[in-house]
Length: 211
Image 1 (cartoon, rainbow, N blue to C red):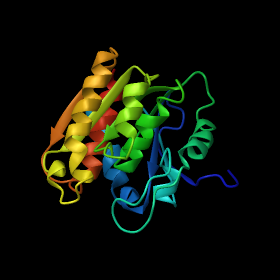
Image 2: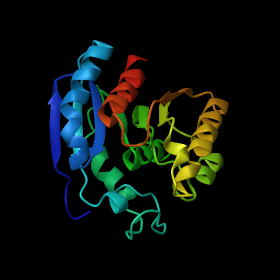
Image 3: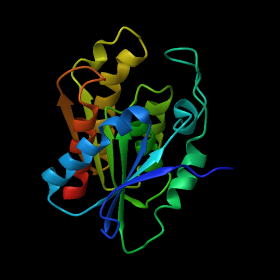
């Protein structure tokens, strides 16, 4: 990749628990509240590295796919993004966790099939409707020991027929991970995809780092 992603840092840089979260401007608007909630929920020191992603549909997509909403197709930049993120995880004395919301949650799940450097995955309302991802999970084994999944209870009522599959896909994801003896939970939240994204992401990270 010919550029490094900008990072925004929160928490204690000396902590041995490090959280990696790809974010856009919308996520950053709620991230201070998210960090406060994680601290209150888990009661332990942590360092959160927010990785600012400019080309959301490209940089977080594991492979190309046609547009599902709007006109922007999905790219295949996840591999390059992961290569940059791994540079942030080079201290062998620390424990690294990756997570995010929406497509960033899907990216976090995908990364744990590519590398074993993450102790856990915090996937809040992940875009598991992404074309081909259900088959990808069925055909591969994840390389982390803990995965948090969540979804809003109205998300599968979306008008878009592809996004409306998210409920079935996340139930399948939970079943698949459970079959692999991964410590996993699926939490249902009240509301649609756009409600309480900061709270949902905080709950996701809190669960995985409590392990």
